[in-house]
Image 1 (tube, rainbow, N blue to C red):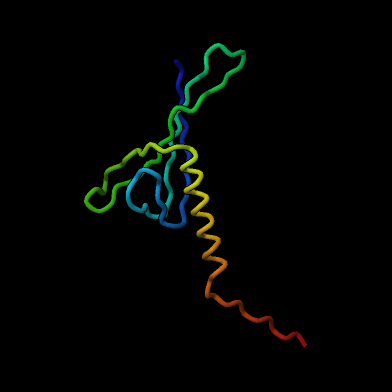
Image 2: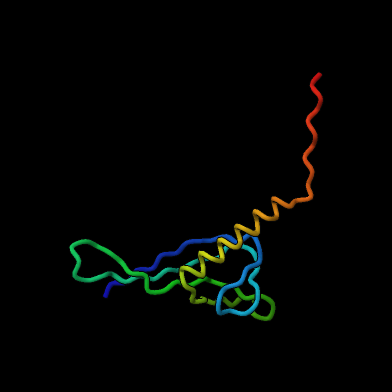
Length: 105
């Protein structure tokens, strides 16, 4: 059986949670590892996802440790969607005021 792994990076702008894991994770860049296996017997090359992991770096007493947390693709997509929605809400409800345009008379 032929396997392949791909890595990518996702960025969270806000603290977030993952289904099945306690506590919030801090904002930042997280590496995603996707493992796939080659489907045999097809006339073309195709892969099936077998696992998705999020790399979480330890904090506090666990600093220096790295944990691969098994997650579903849907849980990752939902977490990223919640993060994006939270960021948009912050922008929409910002207390920052725009400078009024100068009178050009």
